[in-house]
Length: 399
Image (cartoon, rainbow, N blue to C red; front, top):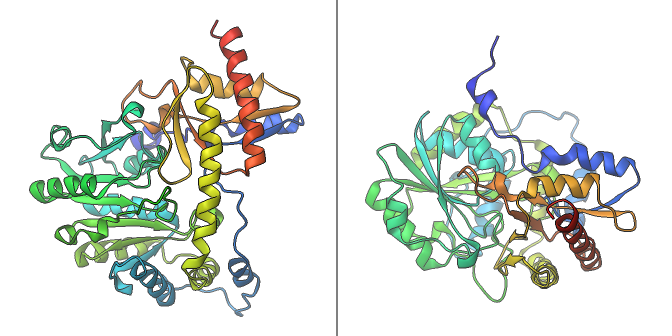
């Protein structure tokens, strides 16, 4: 008996599939510096945790499929602080940003349809596309160009009669690139010209550095009926385990379709929504010190990696990741070797091989994604360990 084609072909997580190697190393007493996953060590704010601890309803019952009105109003108010006008009924609460992506894919396209995504891209787009039976059409970007969006002609070369949407992530995971108003406007014009949707993954919008300003796709009035924005509290408030996100759209037909999907899965989590409401009540002042902390970490990791011979990296403009080309032939083998064979004073480093962040076969085999989610002291030590491991790997494994 065969399982579904989806089950056979869906991509295993290129991040989580290495966890057994890490677990074995930890069981042997090895300290691992985890730069492989965007799970920050910045403490979750006290008001969020207090909201969880203070929950004392006599029954933990179902909530509304679209999420609590108070939370949807809070998110609309948050966007208003960025000059973006939304109603609560433009916001649908989801099970993290992940469900928002899957709902968006399933809403704008039918099985066999295509979505264009600049690569490297957030690896789970592949999985969500498989679940929705869609084809990802990758558009390759380059580290040497700072992973900027290409001219409109390169997008148009990928458009076919089955193309339904373009997906943009800014600030970008995994590259850290922040798209300019001109770059986004270029894609908006294409979407209007070819009657496409634009799905904007903007979950890192607070983390933009060196005085830049994040531009949301919601700011483009000419695309107001075409845009679906994916949002999440996971990175924003350092609470990845809460699993509260949102799909945001001004298109009533899109919202109605997503609401039907939401009704099928009943409701988002009650306690975590209460925590999210508490988070948004903290106000915008919460973000600036957090942003400065990530900017400092970025500088530490960038300077350390740039000093390693053979490494090619560009300084990220946002989020808390960087895509790094390293002088090895296969970073997946290197990542496993670092976990199984390399120790420096009982320590090693775990990064994410970036081949799984591409849709084009064979791309990214000499690249990694590194997340600067550790404090500065740990980052500096991780750089020492990583450099030593890379040098030994080149000298003994790829000699």
